[in-house]
Image (tube, rainbow, N blue to C red; front, side, top):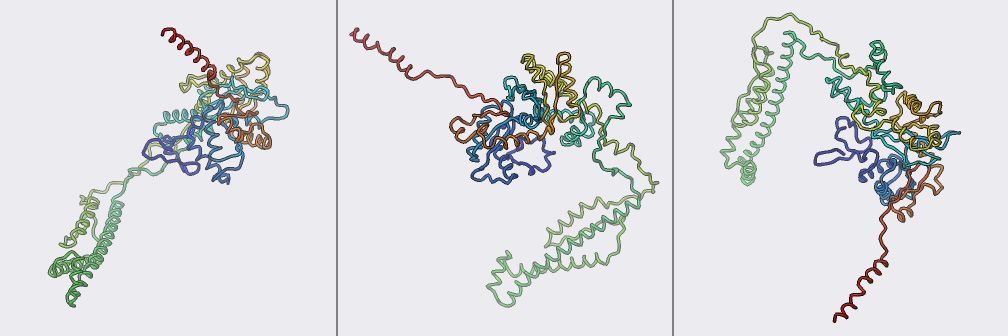
Length: 541
């Protein structure tokens, strides 16, 4: 949907077309990575089922595996379960975390079941400790930085650097630059110092060519070219006038034939039909009819004469002639006025000019190379933008970076568990695909870990799609088991927020309501307070 306006239009998938001009107005049904608008979520599910060839009318008789955010709010899961079970009548559903599915898919022989997952996506980055195959939700941390903030930061840098190309530096083009030309520096300060060297800059700068037009504005025309252009305009104007005269002649001829037919009715003595025709023509008498016939006949003859004169007329000199203005006839006054107005619009094109002495033709040479003017030089931006994951202060965010957050999470465990976690530091998510990311994380771990301690860093085989592959592997393995699947019976008995835990899921924390005092105790307490009242009353009487 789009913000603002009386009507809100919802489009899904390929129906969006090219959203670049409206990208700032688009609104998502997600708040970061948590679904908040279930009406739009239903449209997304309909679109997904349609693309998969699954009919969503009536019921969807297929188990569903769906991902959710780390430590997702119970209300969001409750609304999603209600939508799936009540609207689509699915048999069972399983919820999991995308980064845990990616971790599950990339398990190899000899891999430990524990590890520290660093998952960075479009909206945020998560640090997830996994101990003995289960997520330790209490020590998970989130950084509100991802690919979205990197794209906006790069767009701002390039627009400040090239203010003449604001419209050309779109978010789509900036995303392409970020994915294809950026990399993570192993040592940021040392790398920035290298870029100060002109030789290093020339060797490593990337150039992007923006689209441009090679036509020069304000080119000088010779007098012959001007004369030819005016003659072409005059010919077009003459053709336009001739076409309008023919149309006017045809219309007047049709009206004249109609009036002559009514006059024949009078001459034949068909008075009833004659008076009826006069009423249709909004006329009162035969004299008025005769007057209109005379005027139309004159107008038709004048138009025919003008057409003949235009056909036999010689070519008119552009400088000494003006467009012809038709005379106004008494009957077709509206059409004549239209002709005059249209001619007056073209009259400034053929105004009389004093002949000027012909000047020598001077060719206009561009003062600069247009192709070079429309080039973007991507230099230090290649490392400055990905660096915000490690230094959020570069964009004014008061948050800890990935390295500091990893250190904070590790410090919450004893040394033995710390050693288990760092033996399998797993990087996943689209924002971890920058070249040099693995080497940078290894360098950060080397600085924070004790001397001569060991650690291992692994990058997902496909950081973007491994979450889907992991969910696919898990669904095939657990399809006929009860572990991890929420059935309709579970939904009706335990509520929509209920979650069956499995190796790639969140931790289920049920809603704890305050305990109420039992009614029997309340009744006995009230009887004790009300019991002595009648005895006191009898004593007083």
